Image (cartoon, rainbow, N blue to C red; front, side, top):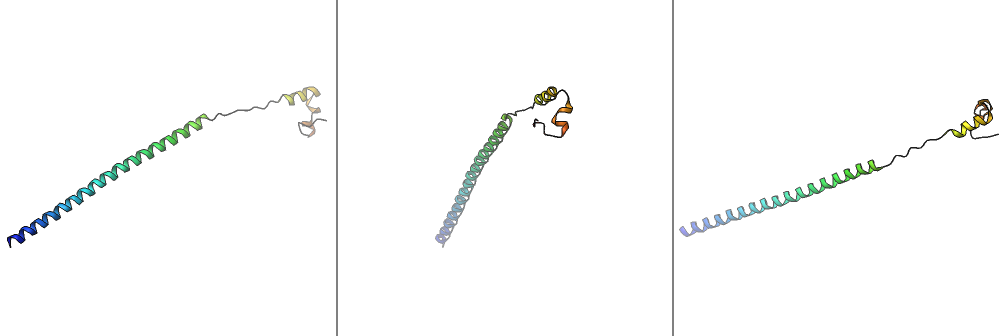
Length: 99
């Protein structure tokens, strides 16, 4: 009878130890997962900020070319003919068409 009680107590102690080891294993797994998640978040943030920085660099590096058209040829037509009435502009023609 006493031996049965001792065996029962020993089994209960083993069950408790197994439950504690299972709980500790789950806590260790949760800590590992948390570390992995932190690493993944850090890597994603680095990739995001690198992409945004490169985009800003590229957009600032684009050169804007300004072109201007001169009106010398139109002025020469007017000067060569003597007055604006003799040009194609007044006669309704195209500026580039010459008689």
